[in-house]
Length: 395
Image (cartoon, rainbow, N blue to C red; front, side):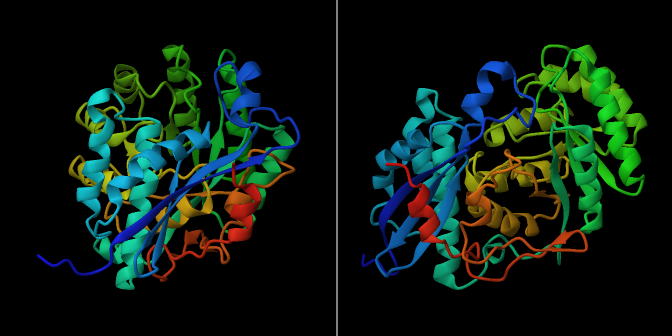
């Protein structure tokens, strides 16, 4: 049988690293911060994926990377040959092939799945470019004219700095913002007072969310104490109060608190989400498409979350502009979309992240009256600035 249409000719993984020049204090809660900050927050990292076809069309994706971007690159270099000569529109069939490489060897999450995520996003971008339509068209079309957005995040810094930043977010038109807490989990009143000061500064009309980054994993009672205080302050959700593998803990918190419990950025695959949904452990799910298996797997999670009547608030975090662009396209196609994470605060106060701010020739993030405008270009609607890629490419 004669095959027609474009065929994949090249899969390239590109690891990028931007050193943070000045030593910084951990801007989010992390365990053993005194020992791990210099590893986790030493620089901005990502692995990009570029897939090309025999007719010269290319698509871009991103793998979420927090450590060792060249490890993700090596995985892609090993499994990329699976795509050679295949139809780029066969996205789900290709996804199953990639997942099958290491699924029965224990690698059903972590770097292997992050590698698949970048490939999958690049395939969806490539498909949109081949067909000449925005990605959201391939996902079923728009469910929203614009996307409600929140400013992320008010990080763990001096109180006067954070309050001023919160007020500036409000002045720019944000009607929602997220606060980081949990640097000192043994003194929860510090976190409670921190949130209370921000609430007083911005007023009751601003929707506030709080993210603990699993800070209370070793003390359920502290998570409960903080959650009750956040309820009294009118906080919209309490994000990742405890470890992502503590399903029983999440169930207990959700039962004991009236505040919404949000989680999902640290989980992988629909299988993990299934257990949280089925047990009623969370009220908002937050997968990141560059970590959870790409758009293909995120669609499965979104469909399942809708079946359980759980809203979807996609995580973006400190990713590059490629993930941000793809997430915009994905989010606007979701009937149960809740709110978009629009990152405003880089890890370093003095050194902005060029992988977010400079990687694209034209930025795709545009805020209007507290909402994101979704671009109409083909695929994920981006053009990469190769000067930035070449400047930070790892050998």
